[in-house]
Length: 302
Image (cartoon, rainbow, N blue to C red; front, side, top):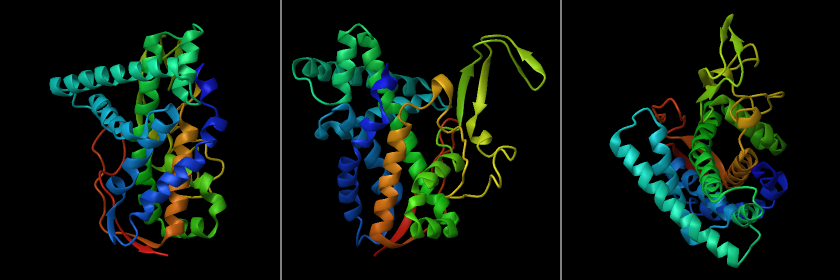
């Protein structure tokens, strides 16, 4: 049901709003000299864009970032009681907000995703709990991962300057370059999955219901699937990476994440003549997420 709502056309219709927002952010970096690409740009985009798509008032969009980060932090390795309490209290606060937003859309329908979800509930196609969990999922799945791949994607281009130069010279490569950013440093490199039926792996038969830990990040560097897997290639074709999962678990927001990245890098390259790395970044130490904590850059305007 939600896949039918979250269409490429719906996402493409957001391009103009995303371009206007990103242009404003990037313009604010002109003359700054040295910036943190993650803190000064990347963290501001996904929550705002997802909020706009859902129909959240612009003034409330910064809260989405905080809610997302407070909930997702519990999925990390260190699942302390304090982390659990923070995630639960945040989820309750976010749920209450979504119920208020839903009540407003019942009274005043709009052309946004929350209205479509409300209409699906009214038709009996989902429950209120499913409405809440779906809206939360759209935010949480697309917020942190997009920030991380923006950072690692920029870092990859700085590590392979010939590829950055190639992309600048031929902007038509942006769609394949974005896909390569997801393959090269998968922002969500690990997931648990359960076997839907008996399956044989490596000569061993596992019963239905077996829990597997799947390392998508490793699969995306598989030399049996990718030529020169440790090389960043902005024109790589084909590129059947697994950064968006697959099958029933294929990423709902993949079109939106790729659009965000397309707009951000296109705007950066148009605005700045030189983008140089100030220092080698430290990456997050986590099994479930992959991205630089910060990315210090020196920018020279075009």
